Length: 387
Image 1 (cartoon, rainbow, N blue to C red):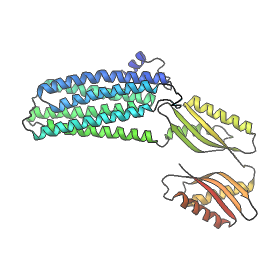
Image 2: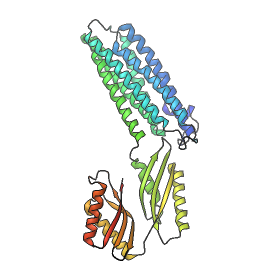
Image 3: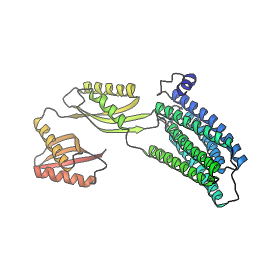
Image 4: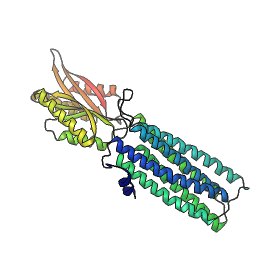
């Protein structure tokens, strides 16, 4: 069904890097969600009010809020497709993160309302539920529709890398679980006479809360800035490694300005004796391939290193070994060997993982101590890169 809808309503559907195609996917997902959620909300609210099933009515209100969330998603995709301008030189794709956060607030608000009404029913025995097989039919259909919406939005999200659609898929799954819980409560009431409606409403509220908090946390991380996607990092490294004259890669930073808008900065080591024009041409070729093959805009800094000085090469290996004695995860780059009259400066950067317990200052002092013990005329000038 997903493929059929994509073929019918999305032109050039394979070109997922295009803002227009992304907007078409977002519009499709939003419109389908709005229509189905409005139908489910109407059916549940009417049936729930007729038979006094507070959990069913609450579930219907939840679907109504889902329709509102889908409208927010629809608007966000429209805004995200806007081209870059003077005030927003990196485009508007990050508006999807803001939309995801708004969706999470809607979900939490619905969860609170469901919890309040469910607790009220538990402590007020006058509120009675009337069983009807019509409720069972409505709930069964709702579970099926919500599971389908979860898969539908998840497939679209995977195709275009959308945080909003991932949030919507997660919300649909929690809705399916919540509705299934209400269905079980109705069946228990039918066959045992025990009215678990209020208790099941509390369970529904908890499920809604968990979904909302999860989406809020994921969106918060995206806005604050997360570690680079390992898949992107390895893809960049793979392309760089295919150029024999690229001797090393370091200081890679991946900047995400929303789905489909990734900028990478990195340093590549080149032979200092090689023509600067040849090295620059290689850098241009790497940037071009990163753009055409990965859809990544890149800014590459060229680091010339000494490759034909035996003493420098040997000292680089010695310092790397001394640094790795501190922690195997440490490594060095941008190594320079500056001889002086009374002492020799060893200038280099150290890559250190965030998990290393030593502070930058402690690490610098430990490296200086070990290098000085190796040769007292050696002084270190180090920069620590956390990565």
